[in-house]
Amino acid sequence: MKLYDLELSGNCYKVRLFLSLLDIKYELVPVDFMSGEHKSPEFLQLNPWGEIPVLEDGDLILRDSQAILVYLARKYGGDWFPNDAKNMALVTQWLSTAANEIARGPNDARLNKKFGFAINLDAAQQKAESILNLIEKHLTTTKNQWLALDYPTIADIACFPYIALAPEGGVMLDKYPAINQWCDRIKKLPNFIEMPGISK
Amino acid sequence: MKLYDLELSGNCYKVRLFLSLLDIKYELVPVDFMSGEHKSPEFLQLNPWGEIPVLEDGDLILRDSQAILVYLARKYGGDWFPNDAKNMALVTQWLSTAANEIARGPNDARLNKKFGFAINLDAAQQKAESILNLIEKHLTTTKNQWLALDYPTIADIACFPYIALAPEGGVMLDKYPAINQWCDRIKKLPNFIEMPGISK
Image (cartoon, rainbow over all chains, first blue to last red):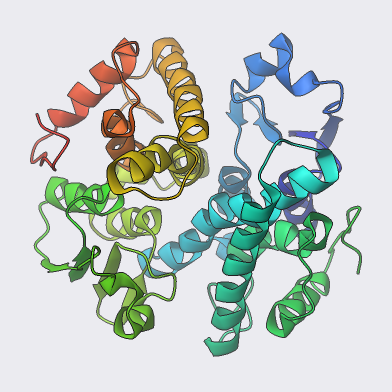
């Protein structure tokens, strides 16, 4: 199994983190993002979207970090993506939150501030605060300690990286105590790994 | 089962369409979007995100259209969201595309042009053309007639509405023949239903 990877990408990190939590061996293939390797003809052959991460497992090629989490969970991870309709849907809600609100908020703010992408920083930071407020309220009112269920699932893994990296987009987490506690719980999972900007 | 609904919302329509394809009876609860009912304290109790659709089934409340499709497929729809890791992940890729690229592209363009939302129309239209080009290329090169697999899945249902509604955001579909043919295939599914802006 090969993971096409960029160390500084939160979407790549969420896959590396989950592979580590599952204790799965794989081959890491670094992609030279800064020189535009992800837009090269060879890479576009692999992923026409021109994005990383990409997971290659035999003849299967997956281009989306949420889909990769689903694949790994169903293949190796048992309850990380539960089987029954209700719990599977409760987890899926947060996969959409990762792909939509978290991408448009803390991820976009970081892409502007850290990497200089032409993205409206004010708008992204406002969206970041909006989704962080909703998640803070959710974690404060739910009886669970995790986003979707009463144990960790790929909902938590999908949402964690760009929330923990929010300060790199100029969005501070001090006023979100429940989110900080949730981040600490994730950091205590067996085989948790760090990335630049996210330490234990 | 209750669906809190707005007739003109593509996200609500994707749930109504799938319920119809599955031939499931349910109660439709119209939400008065124009007067802001989705931001009322009563509605925020149901869905703190303040968004529609919301599906209520017994004590389960789901707030995200992709998650609702997953729930209905797993509960009633057999292969619409397949069980094995590989095919489930291939479908999930397109659920993320619906929640991310299609939301930021054709959906945002329509929100501006049809409903006056304060969204950068040029940027949304550019993103719409970009994702439509990728999907056109995908449909042209894949051996399948459907987005994810060789039969229709919730990948198609999740992506269809805002693609078919793209002209309402000023994004014409004339130059995307494979997308038009795919839309026609969806419109021929048994129990297909229309919405304003999408007719057979």
